[in-house]
Image (cartoon, rainbow, N blue to C red; front, side, top):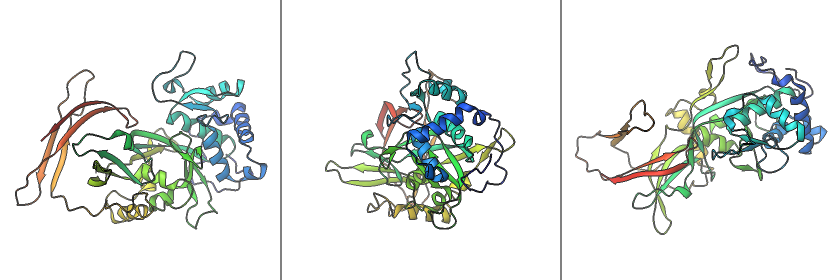
Length: 367
């Protein structure tokens, strides 16, 4: 990689191409420059890696119908003349198909978008890598919490809910951030997967990873969304008939697990969770959450003023669940006091996609 006209500093030990040659193919460079032109990114702005990554984040997807490359689809309905997201094995095939007619390529999901962006940005010299986040949240209302809602009978109100993906993949690029306060240079997170719009366009970032870690969600671009993906508390709400809501429970340790990228010089996983968040439950991590909550769309709700829970609940689940076989789930309750407690509750079971969207209710019951 070369610095070219952009003038950034390369991070230590990240110059290596991670085993890919797609960035050196003519079709990669031609496509990237064509996309910048199609997006009307003026010549002067192309010397700014912030503007370039934000542009490519938008142009890698076609969901705005703006001449972008890939169309995202998650319903498993892929016509014969299209390619399912799982069938792609590299960016060159995608770009060659795109370059022939300058028309949308179908279809993609997060890992395909991320791989394409890695190629496009590396081909013009911007150090870029793919990042995978497990238990990755999708905050749809800038609450900085991952919210799930139930009526007074315990029935899920799915239309109000956020979601938690089994995993999600985005990108990081390394460059300076003179537009931010000092200390925010380095890795910047951005995402071409069309989840939410940013300034009216399907794109995300670049957000300073250091700002995400500190809960500085007021900084551009889309730092609040990335923060919720990796460190939002999961909040369960009871919604009354008149629309009033109250918090039932807060799970502070379930979002953002094993945030990973490929190790330099090997095929091993490099765990970079510590770059996005302080250790779960630590004072620093809670301070970051408190900082983010000050800018939440639900900051006036009493999320963190609940009584201390002295009865702990946990599920016992089998390690493996064979397809087509029954599965047993046990709920364990532990009283951490010397006083008796009476428990009343409801259990709901449902089947969901890896994106956290439920597709079928299984059973509900009281206990």
